[in-house]
Image (cartoon, rainbow, N blue to C red):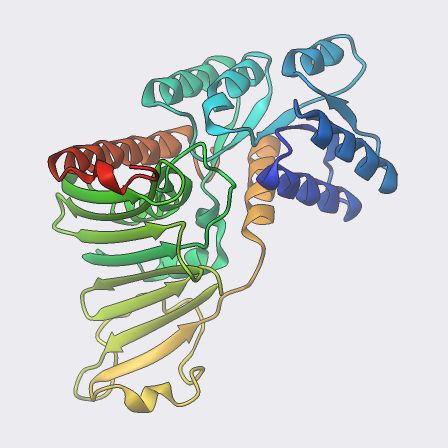
Length: 359
């Protein structure tokens, strides 16, 4: 398979690195082209390709790239779209219409209507459309799936130090959307009600947000996201009958606390086929109240981005549904937009405009 990378900014360069590593390790994929309108980045890409003895065609415009493909100068079968969110739709739509399978980074598009159109184009042309909801491929999330059984309360924190990356979108579309996708996938329930507050701090867009969502199932989820924190935190905790589960995305770490019966056996039986080390926490069990037992399921570490791209390429090869479909991406985007609307309504009601930079 031959790939084109559209957008070689901070995250696009990670895609480039993974494609390069896969090819060097014998995976049947070759990054044959990169589309990057920034001349400085394009020049750096050409130098980097020469340093790695790679044959990569660099284009400043997607149409120029597709024209070269049509003329037979380059071969392209699949694409990674890592451009700014505002350009996701126009780029992905052109690629799908040209018959390419597409991995588009989150969020899938800027609006739900754009997401709908991308899904329609993928169906119309028989193409694979995968959305880059990266945490779905986090090994800790993969390891947690055998334990899922009607979770009823989530507490999620995603905090980052400030970076000028992705300032074209707010913190909900930049960071929180990862966790929205995970919780929506785990709950599989319509939303009954949500409450959201957020503030701009340094970027002019919402940089910190707190959200509470109530689902029709009765499940409640609290989310906190910040890109102006003094520390980096990526954690999710959830409770389900007789069980508490804690996930550290960054460390790819997972532990489970079970409620025991009087004979010392765990009430819950989920995850029995997933090996666990009950004493992996160096004595932490001794601090648990009687009737609780702690175990740490085995997590096979790996880079989520590489796992994401490998999954995409496998879906292309086998012509099977991707792990994160266009519909999944649209669902997360729709919720993120609804949250931003609620934040805007609250800000207007509470006169929070004075918190904006320069306000």
